[in-house]
Length: 241
Length: 336
Image (tube, rainbow over all chains, first blue to last red; front, side, top):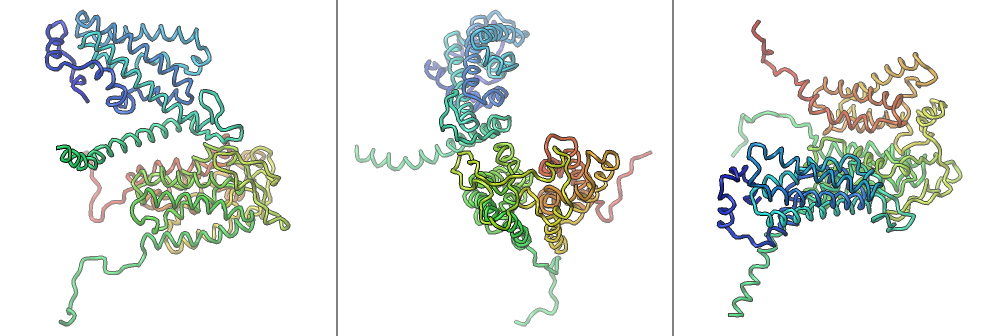
Protein backbone atom coordinates (compact mmCIF):
# COMPACT_ATOMS: atom_id res chain seq x y z
CA UNK A 1 0.00 0.00 0.00
CA UNK A 2 1.27 3.46 -0.71
CA UNK A 3 2.31 5.87 1.94
CA UNK A 4 -1.04 7.62 2.03
CA UNK A 5 -2.25 4.84 4.30
CA UNK A 6 0.21 5.77 7.08
CA UNK A 7 -1.20 6.70 10.53
CA UNK A 8 -3.44 9.75 10.96
CA UNK A 9 -1.97 13.01 9.82
CA UNK A 10 -0.69 15.69 12.10
CA UNK A 11 -3.17 18.45 12.58
CA UNK A 12 -3.56 19.92 9.09
CA UNK A 13 -3.72 23.38 10.61
CA UNK A 14 -0.24 22.70 11.97
CA UNK A 15 0.61 23.97 8.54
CA UNK A 16 2.96 22.73 5.95
CA UNK A 17 1.91 19.07 5.90
CA UNK A 18 0.56 19.39 2.37
CA UNK A 19 3.41 21.49 1.14
CA UNK A 20 5.86 18.96 2.49
CA UNK A 21 4.11 16.05 0.83
CA UNK A 22 3.96 17.88 -2.45
CA UNK A 23 7.55 18.89 -2.35
CA UNK A 24 8.56 15.34 -1.46
CA UNK A 25 7.18 13.94 -4.66
CA UNK A 26 5.29 15.51 -7.44
CA UNK A 27 2.72 12.89 -8.39
CA UNK A 28 1.42 13.12 -11.93
CA UNK A 29 -2.39 13.37 -11.91
CA UNK A 30 -2.90 10.18 -13.87
CA UNK A 31 -1.28 8.13 -11.08
CA UNK A 32 -3.87 9.38 -8.57
CA UNK A 33 -6.61 8.55 -11.01
CA UNK A 34 -5.49 5.15 -12.22
CA UNK A 35 -4.21 3.54 -9.03
CA UNK A 36 -7.72 3.04 -7.65
CA UNK A 37 -8.83 1.22 -10.76
CA UNK A 38 -6.33 -1.58 -10.63
CA UNK A 39 -3.14 -1.35 -8.54
CA UNK A 40 -4.95 -0.31 -5.37
CA UNK A 41 -8.45 -1.41 -6.32
CA UNK A 42 -10.51 -0.92 -3.15
CA UNK A 43 -12.35 -4.23 -3.37
CA UNK A 44 -10.09 -6.58 -5.27
CA UNK A 45 -6.74 -5.52 -3.76
CA UNK A 46 -7.49 -3.70 -0.51
CA UNK A 47 -10.48 -5.93 0.31
CA UNK A 48 -12.53 -3.00 1.60
CA UNK A 49 -16.26 -2.55 1.23
CA UNK A 50 -16.94 -6.28 0.98
CA UNK A 51 -20.39 -6.01 2.55
CA UNK A 52 -22.11 -4.37 -0.45
CA UNK A 53 -19.86 -6.37 -2.78
CA UNK A 54 -21.30 -9.59 -1.42
CA UNK A 55 -24.81 -8.43 -0.66
CA UNK A 56 -26.13 -6.51 -3.66
CA UNK A 57 -24.31 -8.07 -6.62
CA UNK A 58 -26.90 -10.69 -7.46
CA UNK A 59 -27.77 -8.82 -10.65
CA UNK A 60 -25.95 -6.43 -12.95
CA UNK A 61 -28.55 -3.68 -12.54
CA UNK A 62 -28.25 -3.71 -8.76
CA UNK A 63 -24.45 -3.67 -9.00
CA UNK A 64 -24.39 -0.74 -11.40
CA UNK A 65 -26.81 1.36 -9.36
CA UNK A 66 -24.93 0.59 -6.16
CA UNK A 67 -21.65 1.45 -7.88
CA UNK A 68 -22.98 4.78 -9.17
CA UNK A 69 -24.40 5.73 -5.75
CA UNK A 70 -21.12 4.92 -4.00
CA UNK A 71 -19.14 6.75 -6.69
CA UNK A 72 -21.26 9.86 -6.19
CA UNK A 73 -20.92 9.76 -2.42
CA UNK A 74 -17.18 9.12 -2.59
CA UNK A 75 -16.40 11.93 -5.04
CA UNK A 76 -18.71 14.39 -3.27
CA UNK A 77 -17.38 13.78 0.19
CA UNK A 78 -13.76 13.71 -0.97
CA UNK A 79 -14.30 17.10 -2.57
CA UNK A 80 -15.86 18.58 0.55
CA UNK A 81 -13.47 17.00 3.05
CA UNK A 82 -10.47 18.06 1.01
CA UNK A 83 -11.81 21.61 0.72
CA UNK A 84 -12.30 21.96 4.46
CA UNK A 85 -9.29 19.89 5.52
CA UNK A 86 -7.57 22.86 7.17
CA UNK A 87 -10.71 23.87 9.07
CA UNK A 88 -11.62 20.44 10.50
CA UNK A 89 -10.10 19.98 13.98
CA UNK A 90 -8.12 16.79 14.22
CA UNK A 91 -9.96 15.61 17.34
CA UNK A 92 -13.39 15.48 15.70
CA UNK A 93 -12.37 14.70 12.14
CA UNK A 94 -14.03 11.25 11.99
CA UNK A 95 -17.36 12.64 13.17
CA UNK A 96 -17.09 15.47 10.67
CA UNK A 97 -16.25 13.06 7.83
CA UNK A 98 -19.23 10.88 8.73
CA UNK A 99 -21.50 13.91 8.78
CA UNK A 100 -20.32 14.96 5.32
CA UNK A 101 -20.63 11.40 3.97
CA UNK A 102 -24.11 11.02 5.47
CA UNK A 103 -25.22 14.20 3.72
CA UNK A 104 -24.26 12.79 0.34
CA UNK A 105 -25.75 9.39 1.16
CA UNK A 106 -29.06 11.04 1.98
CA UNK A 107 -28.98 12.86 -1.36
CA UNK A 108 -28.17 9.59 -3.16
CA UNK A 109 -30.90 7.74 -1.29
CA UNK A 110 -33.60 10.24 -2.21
CA UNK A 111 -32.38 10.38 -5.80
CA UNK A 112 -32.51 6.59 -6.17
CA UNK A 113 -35.93 6.46 -4.55
CA UNK A 114 -37.21 8.94 -7.11
CA UNK A 115 -35.42 7.65 -10.21
CA UNK A 116 -35.25 3.86 -9.89
CA UNK A 117 -37.75 2.84 -7.21
CA UNK A 118 -37.62 -0.85 -8.13
CA UNK A 119 -33.88 -1.17 -7.72
CA UNK A 120 -34.00 1.06 -4.64
CA UNK A 121 -36.32 -1.47 -3.07
CA UNK A 122 -34.08 -4.37 -4.13
CA UNK A 123 -31.02 -2.72 -2.60
CA UNK A 124 -32.88 -2.38 0.68
CA UNK A 125 -30.84 -1.04 3.57
CA UNK A 126 -27.59 -1.18 1.66
CA UNK A 127 -28.04 2.30 0.18
CA UNK A 128 -28.20 3.82 3.65
CA UNK A 129 -25.30 1.63 4.69
CA UNK A 130 -23.02 3.43 2.21
CA UNK A 131 -22.39 5.73 5.19
CA UNK A 132 -20.34 3.07 6.89
CA UNK A 133 -18.69 1.78 3.71
CA UNK A 134 -15.05 1.69 4.74
CA UNK A 135 -13.84 2.60 1.25
CA UNK A 136 -15.35 6.04 1.63
CA UNK A 137 -14.24 6.76 5.19
CA UNK A 138 -10.87 5.20 4.37
CA UNK A 139 -10.28 7.57 1.46
CA UNK A 140 -11.24 10.62 3.57
CA UNK A 141 -8.95 9.56 6.40
CA UNK A 142 -6.08 8.41 4.23
CA UNK A 143 -6.18 10.78 1.30
CA UNK A 144 -8.70 13.61 1.13
CA UNK A 145 -7.96 14.78 4.67
CA UNK A 146 -4.38 15.62 3.79
CA UNK A 147 -4.21 16.28 0.05
CA UNK A 148 -5.29 19.21 -2.14
CA UNK A 149 -8.72 19.24 -3.74
CA UNK A 150 -7.64 18.30 -7.25
CA UNK A 151 -5.71 15.24 -6.21
CA UNK A 152 -8.44 14.16 -3.78
CA UNK A 153 -11.13 14.30 -6.44
CA UNK A 154 -8.97 12.40 -8.90
CA UNK A 155 -8.29 9.79 -6.23
CA UNK A 156 -11.99 9.51 -5.42
CA UNK A 157 -12.90 9.13 -9.09
CA UNK A 158 -10.34 6.36 -9.48
CA UNK A 159 -11.42 4.54 -6.34
CA UNK A 160 -15.09 4.91 -7.22
CA UNK A 161 -14.42 3.53 -10.69
CA UNK A 162 -12.47 0.64 -9.17
CA UNK A 163 -15.39 -0.15 -6.87
CA UNK A 164 -17.79 -0.03 -9.81
CA UNK A 165 -15.60 -2.35 -11.87
CA UNK A 166 -15.40 -4.85 -9.03
CA UNK A 167 -19.17 -4.78 -8.53
CA UNK A 168 -19.71 -5.14 -12.26
CA UNK A 169 -17.47 -8.22 -12.44
CA UNK A 170 -19.27 -9.80 -9.49
CA UNK A 171 -22.71 -8.86 -10.77
CA UNK A 172 -22.02 -10.14 -14.29
CA UNK A 173 -20.74 -13.52 -13.15
CA UNK A 174 -23.57 -14.00 -10.70
CA UNK A 175 -26.36 -12.85 -13.02
CA UNK A 176 -25.09 -14.78 -16.05
CA UNK A 177 -24.69 -18.04 -14.11
CA UNK A 178 -27.54 -17.54 -11.67
CA UNK A 179 -30.27 -16.37 -14.04
CA UNK A 180 -28.81 -16.79 -17.55
CA UNK A 181 -29.38 -13.10 -18.26
CA UNK A 182 -27.35 -9.90 -18.53
CA UNK A 183 -29.14 -6.72 -17.44
CA UNK A 184 -32.34 -8.73 -17.73
CA UNK A 185 -31.71 -9.78 -21.36
CA UNK A 186 -31.81 -13.54 -21.77
CA UNK A 187 -28.48 -14.85 -23.08
CA UNK A 188 -28.94 -18.56 -23.56
CA UNK A 189 -32.56 -18.95 -24.48
CA UNK A 190 -35.38 -20.38 -22.41
CA UNK A 191 -33.82 -23.81 -21.87
CA UNK A 192 -30.92 -22.52 -19.77
CA UNK A 193 -30.78 -24.15 -16.35
CA UNK A 194 -30.08 -21.39 -13.81
CA UNK A 195 -27.57 -22.06 -11.03
CA UNK A 196 -29.85 -20.80 -8.29
CA UNK A 197 -27.05 -20.78 -5.73
CA UNK A 198 -25.25 -18.00 -7.57
CA UNK A 199 -27.94 -15.41 -6.80
CA UNK A 200 -28.12 -16.62 -3.20
CA UNK A 201 -25.62 -15.40 -0.56
CA UNK A 202 -23.24 -18.39 -0.92
CA UNK A 203 -22.86 -17.53 -4.60
CA UNK A 204 -21.49 -14.12 -3.61
CA UNK A 205 -18.82 -15.70 -1.46
CA UNK A 206 -17.89 -18.25 -4.14
CA UNK A 207 -17.69 -15.61 -6.87
CA UNK A 208 -15.58 -13.25 -4.76
CA UNK A 209 -13.26 -16.11 -3.83
CA UNK A 210 -12.79 -17.09 -7.46
CA UNK A 211 -12.19 -13.50 -8.58
CA UNK A 212 -9.59 -12.98 -5.84
CA UNK A 213 -8.02 -16.34 -6.68
CA UNK A 214 -7.71 -15.34 -10.34
CA UNK A 215 -6.16 -11.99 -9.44
CA UNK A 216 -3.58 -13.43 -7.06
CA UNK A 217 -2.73 -16.12 -9.61
CA UNK A 218 -2.27 -13.41 -12.24
CA UNK A 219 -0.16 -11.26 -9.93
CA UNK A 220 2.04 -14.20 -9.04
CA UNK A 221 2.53 -14.91 -12.73
CA UNK A 222 3.71 -11.36 -13.46
CA UNK A 223 7.30 -11.66 -12.10
CA UNK A 224 7.70 -15.02 -13.81
CA UNK A 225 6.57 -13.54 -17.10
CA UNK A 226 8.89 -10.58 -16.72
CA UNK A 227 11.78 -12.94 -16.01
CA UNK A 228 10.91 -15.02 -19.06
CA UNK A 229 10.89 -11.91 -21.22
CA UNK A 230 14.18 -10.58 -19.87
CA UNK A 231 16.81 -12.57 -21.84
CA UNK A 232 15.08 -11.84 -25.09
CA UNK A 233 15.16 -8.14 -24.31
CA UNK A 234 18.90 -8.36 -23.71
CA UNK A 235 19.46 -10.09 -27.03
CA UNK A 236 17.47 -7.43 -28.83
CA UNK A 237 19.44 -4.73 -27.06
CA UNK A 238 22.71 -6.31 -28.11
CA UNK A 239 21.64 -6.55 -31.69
CA UNK A 240 20.57 -2.96 -31.65
CA UNK A 241 23.97 -2.03 -30.29
CA UNK B 1 28.30 -60.19 8.27
CA UNK B 2 25.76 -62.27 10.06
CA UNK B 3 22.43 -60.95 11.24
CA UNK B 4 22.64 -59.17 14.58
CA UNK B 5 21.75 -61.27 17.60
CA UNK B 6 19.61 -58.62 19.15
CA UNK B 7 17.82 -56.01 17.08
CA UNK B 8 16.81 -52.91 18.99
CA UNK B 9 14.44 -50.44 17.31
CA UNK B 10 11.85 -47.97 18.43
CA UNK B 11 8.19 -49.03 18.52
CA UNK B 12 5.91 -49.93 16.81
CA UNK B 13 7.22 -53.44 16.28
CA UNK B 14 4.18 -54.88 14.53
CA UNK B 15 2.75 -53.33 11.39
CA UNK B 16 -0.89 -54.04 10.60
CA UNK B 17 -0.38 -53.41 6.91
CA UNK B 18 -3.25 -50.95 6.67
CA UNK B 19 -2.44 -47.90 4.63
CA UNK B 20 -4.64 -45.05 3.49
CA UNK B 21 -5.03 -46.38 -0.07
CA UNK B 22 -5.80 -49.87 1.23
CA UNK B 23 -8.58 -48.62 3.52
CA UNK B 24 -9.95 -46.38 0.80
CA UNK B 25 -10.06 -49.10 -1.84
CA UNK B 26 -11.71 -51.40 0.70
CA UNK B 27 -14.43 -48.80 1.18
CA UNK B 28 -14.79 -48.56 -2.60
CA UNK B 29 -15.17 -52.34 -2.73
CA UNK B 30 -17.83 -52.28 -0.06
CA UNK B 31 -19.77 -49.74 -2.11
CA UNK B 32 -19.93 -51.99 -5.15
CA UNK B 33 -22.88 -54.11 -3.88
CA UNK B 34 -24.83 -50.92 -3.09
CA UNK B 35 -24.09 -49.66 -6.57
CA UNK B 36 -25.19 -52.97 -8.03
CA UNK B 37 -28.45 -52.77 -6.08
CA UNK B 38 -29.01 -49.21 -7.32
CA UNK B 39 -28.49 -50.45 -10.89
CA UNK B 40 -30.90 -53.30 -10.29
CA UNK B 41 -33.58 -50.92 -9.03
CA UNK B 42 -33.06 -47.93 -11.33
CA UNK B 43 -31.53 -49.37 -14.51
CA UNK B 44 -28.51 -48.05 -16.40
CA UNK B 45 -29.14 -44.48 -15.26
CA UNK B 46 -27.68 -45.39 -11.88
CA UNK B 47 -24.34 -46.40 -13.35
CA UNK B 48 -24.24 -43.30 -15.55
CA UNK B 49 -24.92 -40.85 -12.72
CA UNK B 50 -22.40 -42.45 -10.37
CA UNK B 51 -19.80 -42.61 -13.15
CA UNK B 52 -20.30 -38.93 -13.98
CA UNK B 53 -19.96 -37.87 -10.35
CA UNK B 54 -16.85 -40.00 -9.95
CA UNK B 55 -15.38 -38.60 -13.16
CA UNK B 56 -15.93 -35.05 -11.89
CA UNK B 57 -14.22 -35.86 -8.59
CA UNK B 58 -11.28 -37.72 -10.12
CA UNK B 59 -10.64 -35.20 -12.89
CA UNK B 60 -10.59 -32.35 -10.36
CA UNK B 61 -8.30 -34.27 -8.01
CA UNK B 62 -5.98 -35.11 -10.89
CA UNK B 63 -5.81 -31.63 -12.38
CA UNK B 64 -5.76 -29.49 -9.22
CA UNK B 65 -4.56 -31.84 -6.49
CA UNK B 66 -1.05 -32.82 -5.55
CA UNK B 67 1.01 -35.37 -7.43
CA UNK B 68 -0.47 -38.85 -7.56
CA UNK B 69 -3.25 -38.26 -5.06
CA UNK B 70 -5.82 -39.95 -7.29
CA UNK B 71 -4.27 -43.30 -6.47
CA UNK B 72 -5.23 -43.15 -2.79
CA UNK B 73 -8.83 -43.69 -3.82
CA UNK B 74 -10.36 -40.97 -1.71
CA UNK B 75 -11.59 -39.02 -4.73
CA UNK B 76 -13.20 -42.19 -6.09
CA UNK B 77 -15.04 -42.69 -2.79
CA UNK B 78 -16.24 -39.09 -2.82
CA UNK B 79 -17.49 -39.49 -6.37
CA UNK B 80 -19.31 -42.78 -5.75
CA UNK B 81 -20.86 -41.57 -2.49
CA UNK B 82 -21.99 -38.35 -4.15
CA UNK B 83 -23.46 -40.34 -7.03
CA UNK B 84 -25.34 -42.53 -4.58
CA UNK B 85 -27.01 -39.49 -3.02
CA UNK B 86 -28.37 -38.26 -6.36
CA UNK B 87 -31.62 -39.18 -8.09
CA UNK B 88 -31.35 -41.49 -11.10
CA UNK B 89 -32.80 -39.03 -13.61
CA UNK B 90 -30.25 -36.29 -12.94
CA UNK B 91 -28.49 -34.87 -16.05
CA UNK B 92 -24.94 -36.19 -16.08
CA UNK B 93 -23.34 -32.75 -16.32
CA UNK B 94 -24.88 -31.80 -12.99
CA UNK B 95 -23.44 -34.92 -11.35
CA UNK B 96 -20.05 -34.04 -12.86
CA UNK B 97 -20.24 -30.46 -11.53
CA UNK B 98 -21.17 -31.79 -8.10
CA UNK B 99 -18.17 -34.12 -8.02
CA UNK B 100 -15.82 -31.37 -9.16
CA UNK B 101 -17.20 -28.98 -6.54
CA UNK B 102 -17.02 -31.53 -3.75
CA UNK B 103 -13.35 -32.27 -4.40
CA UNK B 104 -12.29 -28.76 -5.42
CA UNK B 105 -14.05 -26.66 -2.80
CA UNK B 106 -14.74 -29.40 -0.27
CA UNK B 107 -11.28 -30.91 -0.08
CA UNK B 108 -8.48 -29.35 -2.12
CA UNK B 109 -8.86 -25.77 -0.91
CA UNK B 110 -8.42 -27.05 2.64
CA UNK B 111 -5.17 -28.75 1.66
CA UNK B 112 -6.22 -32.16 0.38
CA UNK B 113 -6.93 -35.47 2.06
CA UNK B 114 -7.05 -35.28 5.84
CA UNK B 115 -7.40 -31.50 6.01
CA UNK B 116 -11.03 -30.99 5.06
CA UNK B 117 -13.62 -29.94 7.62
CA UNK B 118 -16.72 -31.13 5.79
CA UNK B 119 -17.51 -34.36 4.03
CA UNK B 120 -16.72 -33.59 0.35
CA UNK B 121 -19.48 -35.78 -1.08
CA UNK B 122 -22.14 -34.13 1.05
CA UNK B 123 -20.76 -30.69 0.25
CA UNK B 124 -21.07 -31.51 -3.44
CA UNK B 125 -24.64 -32.59 -2.91
CA UNK B 126 -25.47 -29.49 -0.84
CA UNK B 127 -24.12 -27.36 -3.69
CA UNK B 128 -26.23 -29.21 -6.25
CA UNK B 129 -29.29 -29.05 -4.01
CA UNK B 130 -28.93 -25.27 -3.69
CA UNK B 131 -28.12 -24.77 -7.38
CA UNK B 132 -30.62 -27.07 -9.07
CA UNK B 133 -33.40 -27.68 -6.54
CA UNK B 134 -35.91 -29.01 -9.07
CA UNK B 135 -33.61 -31.54 -10.71
CA UNK B 136 -32.39 -32.76 -7.33
CA UNK B 137 -35.87 -33.47 -6.02
CA UNK B 138 -37.31 -35.22 -9.08
CA UNK B 139 -37.13 -38.89 -8.15
CA UNK B 140 -37.92 -41.49 -10.78
CA UNK B 141 -39.87 -44.51 -9.64
CA UNK B 142 -37.88 -47.76 -9.50
CA UNK B 143 -37.77 -49.48 -12.88
CA UNK B 144 -40.30 -52.21 -13.48
CA UNK B 145 -39.34 -55.53 -15.04
CA UNK B 146 -40.36 -54.63 -18.59
CA UNK B 147 -38.54 -51.38 -19.13
CA UNK B 148 -35.42 -51.80 -17.06
CA UNK B 149 -33.35 -50.31 -19.87
CA UNK B 150 -35.25 -47.05 -19.93
CA UNK B 151 -33.33 -44.09 -18.51
CA UNK B 152 -34.64 -42.54 -15.32
CA UNK B 153 -34.81 -39.12 -16.91
CA UNK B 154 -33.00 -36.88 -19.35
CA UNK B 155 -29.53 -38.05 -18.31
CA UNK B 156 -27.91 -36.80 -21.50
CA UNK B 157 -29.09 -33.20 -21.32
CA UNK B 158 -26.39 -30.85 -22.65
CA UNK B 159 -24.47 -28.82 -20.09
CA UNK B 160 -26.27 -25.69 -18.84
CA UNK B 161 -29.51 -26.89 -20.39
CA UNK B 162 -32.60 -27.86 -18.45
CA UNK B 163 -33.50 -31.52 -18.64
CA UNK B 164 -36.44 -32.26 -20.87
CA UNK B 165 -39.39 -33.88 -19.17
CA UNK B 166 -39.20 -37.41 -20.56
CA UNK B 167 -42.07 -39.76 -20.02
CA UNK B 168 -40.27 -41.28 -17.06
CA UNK B 169 -42.46 -42.16 -14.13
CA UNK B 170 -41.61 -40.10 -11.09
CA UNK B 171 -42.91 -40.68 -7.64
CA UNK B 172 -42.54 -39.19 -4.19
CA UNK B 173 -40.03 -40.68 -1.79
CA UNK B 174 -41.32 -42.48 1.30
CA UNK B 175 -40.28 -39.51 3.40
CA UNK B 176 -42.03 -37.07 1.10
CA UNK B 177 -45.18 -39.18 1.18
CA UNK B 178 -45.01 -39.33 4.94
CA UNK B 179 -44.45 -35.63 5.35
CA UNK B 180 -46.77 -34.17 2.76
CA UNK B 181 -49.46 -36.83 2.37
CA UNK B 182 -49.28 -38.62 5.72
CA UNK B 183 -49.08 -41.89 3.82
CA UNK B 184 -46.98 -44.72 5.17
CA UNK B 185 -44.83 -47.07 3.10
CA UNK B 186 -44.65 -50.79 3.88
CA UNK B 187 -41.56 -51.59 5.93
CA UNK B 188 -40.49 -54.47 3.68
CA UNK B 189 -40.21 -52.08 0.73
CA UNK B 190 -37.94 -49.85 2.80
CA UNK B 191 -35.75 -52.68 4.01
CA UNK B 192 -35.26 -54.28 0.60
CA UNK B 193 -35.24 -51.09 -1.35
CA UNK B 194 -38.03 -51.07 -3.92
CA UNK B 195 -38.94 -47.47 -3.18
CA UNK B 196 -38.30 -44.25 -4.97
CA UNK B 197 -35.44 -42.09 -3.78
CA UNK B 198 -31.78 -41.34 -4.31
CA UNK B 199 -29.70 -44.14 -5.81
CA UNK B 200 -28.11 -45.31 -2.60
CA UNK B 201 -30.87 -44.70 -0.13
CA UNK B 202 -33.18 -47.48 -1.14
CA UNK B 203 -32.06 -50.79 0.33
CA UNK B 204 -31.42 -50.28 4.01
CA UNK B 205 -30.50 -53.89 4.66
CA UNK B 206 -27.77 -53.97 2.04
CA UNK B 207 -26.18 -50.76 3.32
CA UNK B 208 -26.28 -52.17 6.82
CA UNK B 209 -24.44 -55.30 5.64
CA UNK B 210 -21.79 -53.41 3.65
CA UNK B 211 -21.24 -50.94 6.46
CA UNK B 212 -21.08 -53.81 8.92
CA UNK B 213 -18.22 -55.31 6.93
CA UNK B 214 -16.29 -52.04 7.21
CA UNK B 215 -17.04 -51.85 10.93
CA UNK B 216 -15.74 -55.42 11.40
CA UNK B 217 -12.52 -54.52 9.61
CA UNK B 218 -12.40 -51.46 11.91
CA UNK B 219 -12.34 -49.10 8.93
CA UNK B 220 -15.11 -47.10 10.52
CA UNK B 221 -15.89 -46.41 14.14
CA UNK B 222 -19.00 -48.50 14.87
CA UNK B 223 -19.91 -46.12 17.68
CA UNK B 224 -21.03 -43.43 15.23
CA UNK B 225 -23.74 -45.45 13.41
CA UNK B 226 -24.71 -47.15 16.68
CA UNK B 227 -25.17 -43.80 18.34
CA UNK B 228 -27.12 -42.41 15.37
CA UNK B 229 -29.46 -45.42 15.18
CA UNK B 230 -30.04 -45.54 18.94
CA UNK B 231 -30.75 -41.84 19.32
CA UNK B 232 -32.93 -41.65 16.19
CA UNK B 233 -34.93 -44.73 17.24
CA UNK B 234 -35.41 -43.38 20.76
CA UNK B 235 -36.56 -39.96 19.58
CA UNK B 236 -38.81 -41.40 16.88
CA UNK B 237 -40.46 -43.77 19.34
CA UNK B 238 -41.05 -40.94 21.75
CA UNK B 239 -42.54 -38.66 19.12
CA UNK B 240 -44.61 -41.50 17.67
CA UNK B 241 -46.05 -42.18 21.12
CA UNK B 242 -47.00 -38.53 21.49
CA UNK B 243 -48.59 -38.04 18.07
CA UNK B 244 -48.83 -41.19 15.93
CA UNK B 245 -50.55 -39.39 13.05
CA UNK B 246 -47.75 -36.91 12.44
CA UNK B 247 -44.61 -38.76 13.41
CA UNK B 248 -43.43 -42.06 12.00
CA UNK B 249 -42.20 -44.92 14.12
CA UNK B 250 -38.64 -45.90 14.87
CA UNK B 251 -38.21 -48.47 12.07
CA UNK B 252 -39.55 -46.11 9.42
CA UNK B 253 -37.18 -43.39 10.63
CA UNK B 254 -34.20 -45.72 10.46
CA UNK B 255 -34.89 -47.31 7.08
CA UNK B 256 -36.28 -44.38 5.12
CA UNK B 257 -34.32 -41.75 3.26
CA UNK B 258 -30.60 -41.38 3.48
CA UNK B 259 -30.22 -42.18 7.16
CA UNK B 260 -28.65 -45.61 6.56
CA UNK B 261 -26.19 -44.42 3.93
CA UNK B 262 -25.45 -41.25 5.88
CA UNK B 263 -24.87 -43.05 9.16
CA UNK B 264 -22.75 -45.81 7.67
CA UNK B 265 -20.71 -43.98 5.05
CA UNK B 266 -20.94 -40.19 5.41
CA UNK B 267 -20.88 -39.63 9.16
CA UNK B 268 -18.09 -42.16 9.59
CA UNK B 269 -15.75 -40.45 7.13
CA UNK B 270 -12.38 -40.91 8.82
CA UNK B 271 -11.36 -37.32 8.21
CA UNK B 272 -14.47 -35.49 9.33
CA UNK B 273 -15.54 -37.56 12.35
CA UNK B 274 -14.22 -37.20 15.91
CA UNK B 275 -11.10 -39.11 16.90
CA UNK B 276 -12.20 -40.01 20.44
CA UNK B 277 -14.80 -42.66 21.17
CA UNK B 278 -16.78 -40.40 23.46
CA UNK B 279 -16.68 -37.77 20.76
CA UNK B 280 -18.13 -40.32 18.31
CA UNK B 281 -21.06 -41.06 20.62
CA UNK B 282 -21.84 -37.35 20.99
CA UNK B 283 -21.34 -36.76 17.25
CA UNK B 284 -23.77 -39.55 16.33
CA UNK B 285 -26.36 -38.38 18.84
CA UNK B 286 -26.12 -34.86 17.48
CA UNK B 287 -26.63 -36.06 13.90
CA UNK B 288 -29.67 -38.13 14.91
CA UNK B 289 -31.29 -35.30 16.87
CA UNK B 290 -30.84 -32.92 13.94
CA UNK B 291 -32.20 -35.49 11.48
CA UNK B 292 -35.35 -36.06 13.52
CA UNK B 293 -35.83 -32.32 14.11
CA UNK B 294 -35.46 -31.47 10.42
CA UNK B 295 -37.67 -34.34 9.30
CA UNK B 296 -40.39 -33.55 11.84
CA UNK B 297 -40.47 -29.78 11.90
CA UNK B 298 -38.30 -28.57 8.99
CA UNK B 299 -39.46 -27.52 5.56
CA UNK B 300 -37.57 -30.35 3.90
CA UNK B 301 -38.57 -33.98 3.90
CA UNK B 302 -35.02 -35.19 4.45
CA UNK B 303 -32.32 -33.71 6.66
CA UNK B 304 -29.48 -36.22 6.87
CA UNK B 305 -27.17 -34.21 4.63
CA UNK B 306 -27.46 -30.96 6.57
CA UNK B 307 -27.33 -32.75 9.93
CA UNK B 308 -24.02 -34.38 9.11
CA UNK B 309 -22.56 -31.19 7.66
CA UNK B 310 -23.56 -29.22 10.76
CA UNK B 311 -22.08 -31.82 13.07
CA UNK B 312 -18.90 -31.91 10.93
CA UNK B 313 -18.40 -28.28 11.84
CA UNK B 314 -18.47 -29.22 15.53
CA UNK B 315 -15.92 -32.02 15.24
CA UNK B 316 -12.81 -29.98 16.18
CA UNK B 317 -14.66 -28.79 19.26
CA UNK B 318 -15.76 -32.33 20.18
CA UNK B 319 -12.18 -33.52 19.79
CA UNK B 320 -10.95 -30.86 22.18
CA UNK B 321 -13.67 -31.44 24.77
CA UNK B 322 -13.30 -35.21 24.88
CA UNK B 323 -9.54 -35.50 25.07
CA UNK B 324 -8.75 -38.53 27.23
CA UNK B 325 -6.53 -38.16 30.25
CA UNK B 326 -2.90 -38.80 29.41
CA UNK B 327 -1.81 -42.02 31.11
CA UNK B 328 0.00 -41.31 34.33
CA UNK B 329 -1.08 -37.71 34.57
CA UNK B 330 -3.47 -36.42 37.21
CA UNK B 331 -6.31 -34.03 36.59
CA UNK B 332 -5.41 -30.52 37.67
CA UNK B 333 -7.01 -29.77 41.06
CA UNK B 334 -7.86 -26.25 41.92
CA UNK B 335 -6.81 -25.09 45.34
CA UNK B 336 -9.80 -25.05 47.71
